Image 1: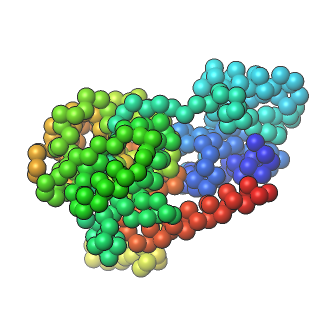
Image 2 (image 1 turned 30 degrees about the vertical axis):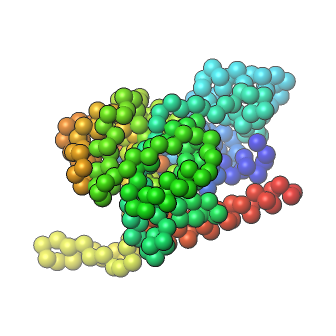
Amino acid sequence: MNSTVLKSLLIRPDTTMKQAMQKLTSTGEKILFVVSRNNKLLGTLTDGDIRKKIIMGMKLNHNVEEIMQTNFTFVKDDDLQKDQKSIHLMKQKKIDQIPVLNSEGIIKHVISWVDYIENSFYKTPNNSFSVVIMAGGKGTRLDPFTRILPKPLIPLNNKPIIEHIMDKFYENGFHHFYLVINYKKEIIKMYVNENQFPYKIDFIEEKEYLGTAGGLSLLKDIFNDTVIVTNCDTILDGDYTDIIKWHKERNNIVSIVGTHKEITVPYGVLNMAGGNLDKIEEKPRYDLFINTGFYIFEPDVFKFVRKNQYTNMDIFLNTIKHKYENRIGVYPHWGKWFDIGQWDEYRKSLQFLDDNNKNLSRKKNE
């Protein structure tokens, strides 16, 4: 890991959990290193550490000093066998990075699995689970584009949205997709059939518009194992295998991926007590976790969707919650998430992809 990347991963003990989440998002890494002013390593902080505390109810304004891991694994800078020891320790402890410290405990370097990809220590997972993409809606939020094209085929950097979604899953080891289609379905089928993809695609056709969850009733007799379900206008950047592992470890019947959003109310908010003003907050900010439209379902839940009945996802999930108390989990996510189903977010996604491509081109030319 070069010095510039390492520097971006160093944080102080008084950094808040929210600031740490933002740092993980901007760097695309899964670990941060908590250091003193002279860069002496005090502790490590992973995305899993933060996720665990959020689930336990800890507020995002708490400092990382309260949750960092002080019993961390490291190797010494003057150890001639540090590379081999690091590989052994990463395998033994199932960790992805190991800090390298000098004799004073100052972090000088980080050894990562990524450093050994060419030596085949790192492999893309092979996930046997199927992916269902709900692609039957009319996409009214993207009008007038969707008067001509179905939402799954709206272009995003010269490639349809749905292809971006499937490619992202494929990068995470998934190979089999079911597309629930309805609106302009013949155009979707024609596009898929006229192109060659390295994964398998099956179509599930709605005869009527069944809402954001009703189409799942057509899948009742197909699956006998865990299924990933996603909207056709959402792209989630993250480790999908880690999400599934989290889902299985908690024995959830359903897991919903929720992403952090800071919402600013553009007005002065009045807090009242007994008809009197308690206090006024000008343009307050709230930290929320919102639904990304990315779910993991166990096959038993499909029996709660009535065949050919219009049902939206919120109604479906609330029905399951009444049947399986404490088995619907929310996986806190703070990586990149693109909601391409509305114009503002679609434009932001285009800009991000353009900027990202420019950065990649610049790095190749350096």
